Amino acid sequence: MTINQIATPELEDWYRLNIGRGCSLDQLHDSLLQAGYAATFALDFLRWRSGGEWQPKPVQAGAAGDPAVTGPAGGGATTDGGETIVARALADHAGKPALEAWWARCDELAAASHIDLGDRAARITGRHVRNGIFFLRGVLSPEECDAMVAASVARIHDSTVVDPTTGQFVPDHRRTSQGTHFARAANPVVAAVEQRLARLSGLPEPNGEGLQILHYRVGGEYRPHFDYFDPATPGCALQLKHGGQRLLTIILYLNDVEAGGGTIFPELGLEFLPEKGAALLFASMTREGALQPLSLHGGSPVTAGVKWIATRWIRVGTYV
Ligand code: PD2
Ligand code: ZN
Image (cartoon, rainbow, N blue to C red):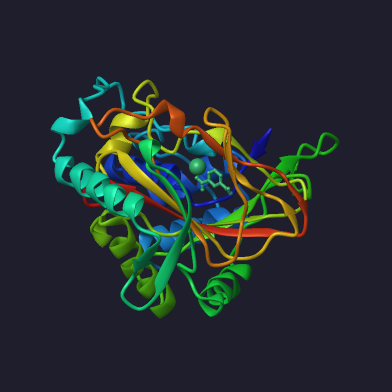
């Protein structure tokens, strides 16, 4: 069993849900540890999320009457306490303007070879217009890429595996990735990049989730998945409360990968190779506002060197 120790949006949802239900930080801390998160990660995450200098109590005991933490926290699973999950028609969400804005932008990108991003110009070098997929060079400067990597190095959390002998969670070089995230406008480079991505996508900056940073070593991969929230899963209704469905993904490549590490779309037979400063945009929703099954995508294994990316997921509404 492995746990990817990244403060994912799903983990944030789990935090919000349980704090909203009256659980204490100590309870959440216990729950994270029980789910297998490293103590340092659990502490950092809860301090960051609660915005304070919180310290866990030395002895944890659920007081009578304390609400039980929903879980498990591991893997980002959430429950909504039995609330009925309704997969709403997406186009009737308040996000219809965003849907229209993105697909209008898509038509502009389809007809252009360069795009003015205000402080930079990027070159479109690949596209699959029907599915709203674009690859652009020069979205970030090399200096911006380096600054984002440098600001992440000290903060990435090692993924862990269970040591079959001791049962302890230990770092393992075979684990696929490590990661961290930036709060929105966390520093001047992040703020400038967020503004540029809003201009690139035609979508409001507040619709974007904080940038997620992933680092892969040789063998690291991200198996094919959807970035949209699957209405069939229990956590979906909760996730949709924070700005609705994910409409667009922007992957920023922060380094040149020696070999491997392409982003693949298995249903479309497409692969985009990492290139420092380049961006890959793809839509998780169709023009009509339905979920796009052809957006299935993954990160193929790095075969030499390392790979750094930043991912921006953009919702149909304001991300809260
Ligand atoms: O690293 C990638 O290429 C990759 C692949 C699939 C990243 C993501 N998904 C993601 O961040 O959602
Ligand atoms: Zn993805």
